[in-house]
Length: 263
Image (cartoon, rainbow, N blue to C red; front, side, top):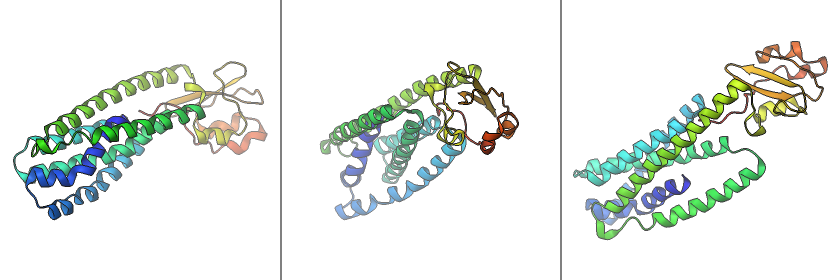
């Protein structure tokens, strides 16, 4: 997905003045000046979509929405005839791909756990970013002005593919989260960082090798093994102090959620 995103990011960010000049008949100085406003506009979709994604704890729909906006923007840029409509398409496409940088970073960060997995993922992301940048530098061809058919179709196709990949991953995450809710099986041996910090030295298990504590917060639950070997079914964080021994009462303010994939 990073390859697909940087493919468009590089082509549009570096070649937008060229697109405006050769594709819309603007002068060199005017095209350079008009290439800046889409990036000022992009702060709005970035902040709005990031806020909504954080509020609803869901990244996949945000990435899909931004991808659809980018497809619409490139369709306006590539197929419309009026210069104003084509220029409006650059706003839509620029705001969408920049907003997807934030959404995609959170989507990856929330669903990759473990030190070595994160290290490998960072390396893979860096490589894919570089490859996408190289590929993106070749899709805007001056000889195709004013329509730039290759750039338009590659950008649209890349984000159709991105939507498919997000649907595939989110479908898998949905199934895994449902299994976790039904069985209490901890996903990849992880709980949230705030959960671990508040429980101190408790050891996460999968119901094996220790007594499990099932903590229910809203509709989510997870299994942990207390180092004291004390079993306590809890329905809310407020009930925690009534079940755990007196030397663990400092953890009554538990607010962490159980580890689940972020859709």
